[in-house]
Length: 101
Picture 1 (cartoon, helix red, strand yellow):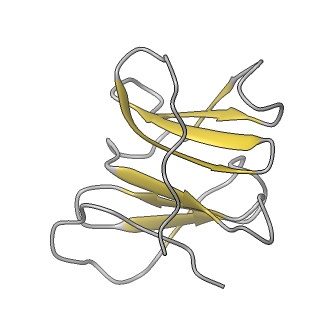
Picture 2 (cartoon, rainbow, N blue to C red):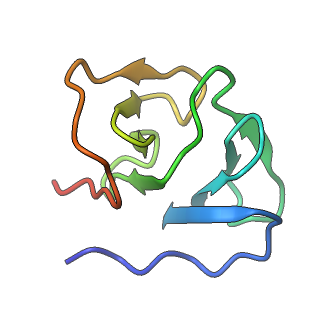
């Protein structure tokens, strides 16, 4: 079952995901991500160099593991959104993602 996205009042919000106090928001801005480790009280930018995003997911058992979806490519961070690695395969147009573990 895919968890419901958190309700956020951020400008130009495209998608969001949360796990515990970690919240990641995909924004129609540059850089395309905002990450909070205190349930949305404070935010930091993330994803410089990433293309515009469509969806995001956070691992329930490890909130440092984040999956970010652009139009047809996935990017994985294992350090809370500081560094990103492209998943090698290019996919058809992506609409949603989930990390199931």
